[in-house]
Length: 132
Image (cartoon, rainbow, N blue to C red; front, side, top):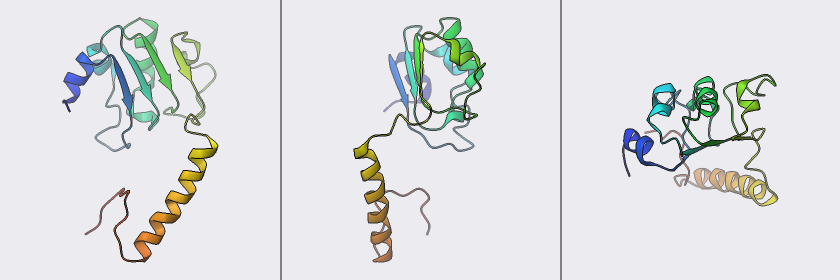
């Protein structure tokens, strides 16, 4: 486990899996992208606004980072004329990279299991916001 600055300067691959909060909005911005290695690859499958989309497009275009995998965008659907669309070093998917028969089944049964746990007086396994 390292702090964000260390992660940005040392990582070859960064995969974002954070919730979108006031603290994480544009957590990866122009300044953060400039700290990354020019050979780094960054993937975002969590929430689009965690990364400043315009700064990301510019970093890819200028070779500040090597490549990107993008499944979520600040504005969905991503406009067809957005600079990210034309970047040859970016792989874009329409917010469904998670999809498979298995993940759909797990999502449905997992949600039902959590409801059952809470209704039977147990704490859920997957808290979003803990209450007192």
